[in-house]
Image 1 (cartoon, one colour):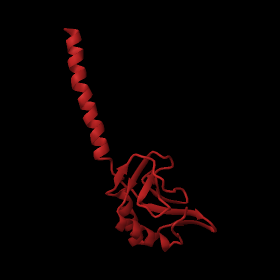
Image 2 (cartoon, one colour):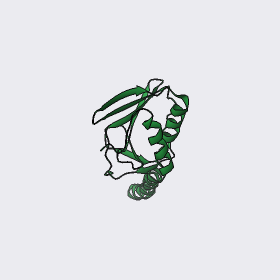
Image 3 (cartoon, helix red, strand yellow):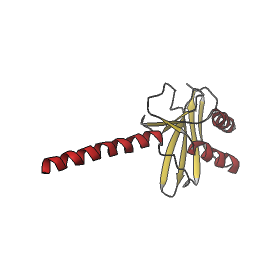
Image 4 (cartoon, helix red, strand yellow):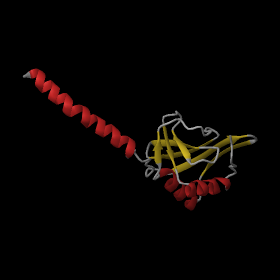
Length: 142
């Protein structure tokens, strides 16, 4: 009786875990930036070394909107160049660093490690580039 109970439990548990894992891939966690009180842009490329707080209210709101999503998660390691630019969202004791791709593609890296990537739309990517150009960022920067 105990053996059949263990088999039944395993047969129920394995599909349940598989469904949860599948849902995490299909419906990835969105990037939530509702805590943001300050956005800092860091950009080091060629002869530029820019570290500036985003003070313009419209730019501030648009950057949050663009970087929050709705993005598509991507789990392969993209070929895009990252690292020359970072947007740091801070507030209420939290901090999230988002690295937009430097080669003009819509891929964004969340955090310093190559663990979680998501994509923004072409329209949002162009808007992002327009906003960042005001602060001296040029593309491509790879």
